[in-house]
Amino acid sequence: EPEVTQTPSHQVTQMGQEVILRCVPISNHLYFYWYRQILGQKVEFLVSFYNNEISEKSEIFDDQFSVERPDGSNFTLKIRSTKLEDSAMYFCASIGLAGGLGTDTQYFGPGTRLTVL
Amino acid sequence: GESVGLHLPTLSVQEGDNSIINCAYSNSASDYFIWYKQESGKGPQFIIDIRSNMDKRQGQRVTVLLNKTVKHLSLQIAATQPGDSAVYFCAENGGATNKLIFGTGTLLAVQP
Image 1: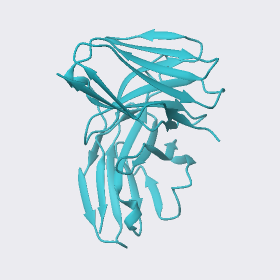
Image 2 (image 1 turned 180 degrees about the horizontal axis):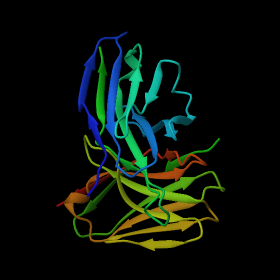
Image 3 (image 1 turned 45 degrees about the vertical axis):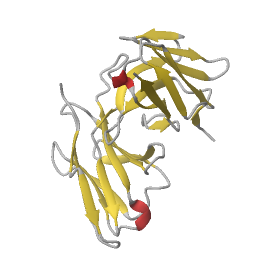
Image 4 (image 1 turned 135 degrees about the horizontal axis):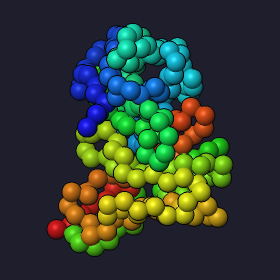
């Protein structure tokens, strides 16, 4: 069964450093998302991406964040200068929107745990 | 503002019993709802979804009920098993970009 994959599974970085979180969405999907989950809290939307551009972003997604789809398979989230409060699980998700129940559902990757020291 | 929330933060059930997890949403214009299961250290896993033109939808051992009058969503799990132990989130499709608005989550603990 196709799945969303993410690397690395765990990233430890120093405050102020840049990190890049990587995702490979399901191959025929068209819409891509990043979400964040601070430990013990709910999953929060960060950004949606379609047709090689951001379609929507949340208040969390400030100038320190950027996304890119550098090729036909990878989807990345970059944090330019990490802060302590960026420590969280980051999930990538994708949708195919082929129509019908279940086919416009977002399928999530396993997440990257980011720890900022 | 828009929000999706849960009534119960934890639910403890005996193995074999039925479980009911509840969720309230505030945006009456929402037309698509999803239940996700999240096991420790993993990403949200799709369980079942329902559109606003339906009141009920059944899957394997799971049923989702939607009451639009009171803006309430529930997930019923039949014959709950230890493997069902996880945090369950309801989510609401948040508009044209299909972003998801998640509820707080309910921890389901299945006692053997």
